[in-house]
Image (cartoon, rainbow, N blue to C red):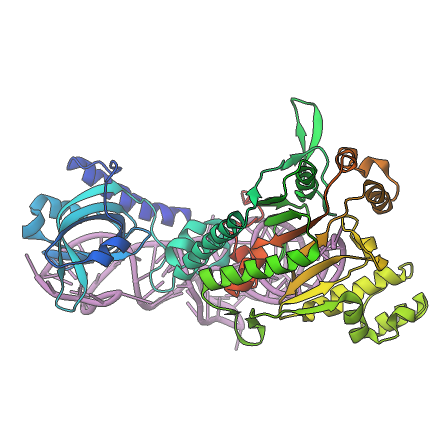
Amino acid sequence: MTDERNLFREQRLANRHRLEAMGIAPYGDAFPRERIVELAARFREGESARIAGRLVLIRNMGKSTFGHLDDGTGRFQIYLQKNEVGDTAYEAFRYLDPGDWIGVEGVLFVTRTGERTLRVARWTMLSKALLPLPEKWHGLRDVEQRYRQRYLDLIANREVRELFCRRSALIWEIRQFLHTDGFMEVETPMLQPQAGGAAARPFLTRYHALDTDMALRIAPELYLKRLLVAGFDRIFELNRNFRNEGLDRTHNPEFTMLEIYEAYTDVRRMKDLVQALILRVADRVYGNRTVGKGEQAIRLDPPWREVSYRDLVKERMGVDWFELSVEAARARARAAGLEVPADWDHLLITHEVYEKLIERTLIQPTFVTRLPAALLPLARPCADDPATADVFELVIRGQEIAPAYTEMNDPLLQREAFLRQAGNNLQKVDEDFLTALEHGMPPAGGMGVGIDRLVMILSGEEAIRDVILFPQLRPRNEG
RNA sequence: GGGCCGCUAGCUCAGUCGGUAGAGCACAUGACUUUUAAUCAUGUGGUCGCGGGUUCGAUUCCCGCGCGGCUCACCA
């Protein structure tokens, strides 16, 4: 396998040496040039042009040769004639291989079959490729290689390239939207002495200079709230979180999260904000409010359904669900096909019902409101019912896209909630954060938006690794 | 972590009911000065993922391992 690969490499190395023997440097210098996308827009026959790119196709016809140049903005056909470029330059062109980078200049014309083409007067070597491009008919299909050598995937598969261009445009659009709305982007620590703001296993590491353990953040929440204490009224952070959990179709250990906080508001403002944000990117980046295909097609046109957690559970498990004894609830959940350990209380059973039987059925955008306060220590309880939190979860295509809270800002209640969550393990309570709260945090609404999942939904993709350029894979080891 | 499936030429794939393998593209050589996944002719290219077992003989059957995919579990 390696020998075979080397054979191709040897042939290309031989071509490199032939070029060098002719006085042509295989790795050339900067080459000022016009982008192909711009050339295509201003094309006029007879005018001159200067472009550069990767030579993706070569069709040699004896004393003339056609090729296609791809510069990342587009593709353009080039044409060489032996008597035009001269014997030496034409001879040297024979030592080019598909995948090489070159620069060309010449005059524009239209071929007999109507294709816009550059007749090359001079060409310049920019970079020799020693390894071949993926197959030109079928592209690169091998899933493992697509992820391990994503650059080949991006060369060979146009739709993959477009997906990542859209992802970039989406992120730009979100930033622009928020800046226009008066939000300030901030950067808080990714390396934290104590991971907080969510319940997940962190990646742990060692900081030698301080001789102390550190964690990669699982969420930026507790630092962003410190900034609310500082008096910033509209802030957001758009960056990576790290969670040391399983790897599957919807989970990557590092993923991109947008967190937004706005002082003097609550969860209802977040509802309007997330809807406006998603519609903005759907309109401007995807140009469509219906995304995905078939039964999975998502209609983003408002209004979006809003329903309480309680009502959803009653809808699925019976109106008397919340009056049932633990034993009766357990029996009914088991009858519905769930595995329910004997020591679970009513709250845990109910949440299992929600996660396993209900959430995945919510395909169209749905705000699930009033979740159990016991599960959400960082949210403020509802005024009319302290057992439920004043929150929503935006669910689309069965996936949680954006949780939003009216944020907890009472330091005493916050401490109680932390202690309940930590099982009175004092190690886990973030005292620095509680101290900040004791200095006074204004009432605020806050929200997290899972960017990878949002891109998945808007792009109609089912696997998170298809929307991450370099998804996590098991490292290759020697055989 | 469990279950199932996959791994054959550089790429995309076929195939061998157990007798060491094929196609297209790519690559090489030749022909061709407006081609379009150029065409035509000739040719090169493989430890059939790795290791072990059964067998006269294993790419094929069995076991283990590696990597990947799907799925279940875990994951507020």
